[in-house]
Image (cartoon, rainbow, N blue to C red):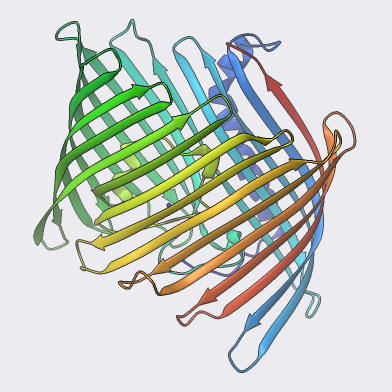
Length: 461
């Protein structure tokens, strides 16, 4: 539970179609992986769990106010755009695929000087896994595309961040040294492809996972790994070891781990430095048919490049708006998430909150990151629905109580069903940027009218 403030990109007409093709390519790539499963599951057979998606055309108007200190600049832009999203989970025997992608392409015109600006953004993730209990071999593939910020700071327009694609792949080989024990050796690799000022990164991780069943519901184990990464001409090696314990409960599960990590960095010119840290995690989840709540504390040592190969499953419910790049840090993070599909007979609720303390091992600088939000949907009647979303992100330096940069986003929407798969909606999107650094405070208000066409497929295993 991942800034560089930039100006909105300006494209020619050719580049605009390239942007559409780029979004489409990511969709097609994900669907291409899913196709063998979808083909085998025609007619909503047992191998399909859920698949949904939509395509929308929208028009709107955006009003922006920028506080220059001694004066306030205002700007109003009408816009026209396209957006789309697809998500779902599919299973077929030992194969499983989970994905969620969304993209937007918008063109707007400044009413003051007539300049035209095109903005495009895409975020999402997909993960394919093959795991057959009757086979010793397993493997996985993953893809994420996200907005990445290189230093502290936020912007009101998400498309002003740089975009990074990440590919990951890995495989494991299992052995059974006894009826109650499992030993798995694995390798993972990850590579990122960044646009504009972002450099490509890569990392590799190898390790072993030993687990032993202690009782009918509990297991214990030992995880050992080594990771290599290359970032900004700096080679980083991280060795980690951790004892873990997990317990399945009627109301969910509990897990805990403790260990340590040691890192070695080799800078350009041959200079090397070594760092070590105590690491661990504690997680408790409560799960029912209608809701799920999770509380997790995690302490780890890593950098942005190393994270590429760790292949941690993304939280598809709350994919972050932006991912902040960082050097080698020891991170203490606490996160809470809650999803409830039946808060009342006609409403659903999602809540999340997360905070991290980051200590750079290279520079010694300490910083804090915070993130929180709520999503609430209410079904007015069979044809109309209200949605409300609020998100907040904040960055602080060594003093955790002094927020240096923060942004609030509020989204309010009304949707009416026009036909079985067609709807019309009105959205009000509000963004408030507040900064104690050299960045100007900014407010943005966007009113959108959206016509959408979607599809939903579901089945039971």
